[in-house]
Length: 214
Picture 1 (cartoon, rainbow, N blue to C red):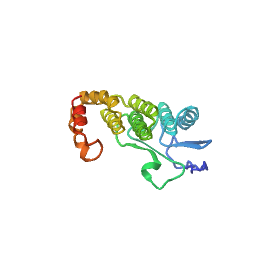
Picture 2 (cartoon, rainbow, N blue to C red; picture 1 turned 30 degrees about the horizontal axis):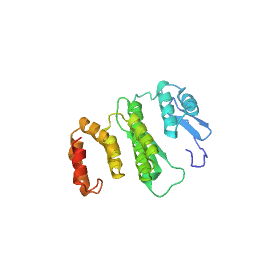
Picture 3 (cartoon, one colour; picture 1 turned 135 degrees about the vertical axis):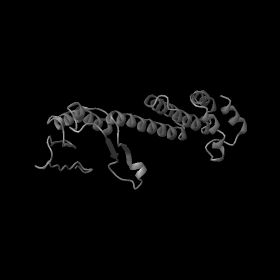
Picture 4 (cartoon, one colour; picture 1 turned 180 degrees about the vertical axis):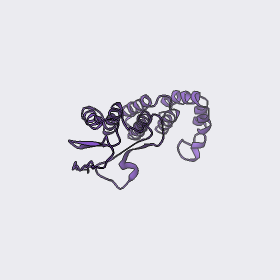
């Protein structure tokens, strides 16, 4: 285990089922048991140290390195990842940066990586919304673009991007995005008028008609 200050404690007991072991490095600890090969934890450590990106990326690299060395001798089934902030705010929905589980899959690591990408796409979408609210249009568009790159074909991300643009008074910028969304799934067109009563789109019949007509 490792605390938020980087203090580490780890132990591999004599009764752990082979292959089992651990390795400790700067601000990390990797451990495993029931592995096919004894090279797993060293490979995990090397991958974690050499990987770039956010903590989730480095942890994912370690998991993939473990699998490349043979992984669990029982085969592949599940994977999970939890990343939290170093200083809790008292708001779990803010503090939990990544909280993902794959309980049963023939390729759990591939599925976990896919979910991490989707999670990050929604993070960028939320960031774009915040920038738009602050009037930082260029930064908002950059965040939305990154979101779309991470989750291509995700109609919901595009829809809420367009809805946020409308709420910020950027109707012309939003219309081509609405058109693309409606081409992907007609149900999003049906949803548009329903957002007025919820206060998520302006109560402007002409504007709503224009959106729906895309």
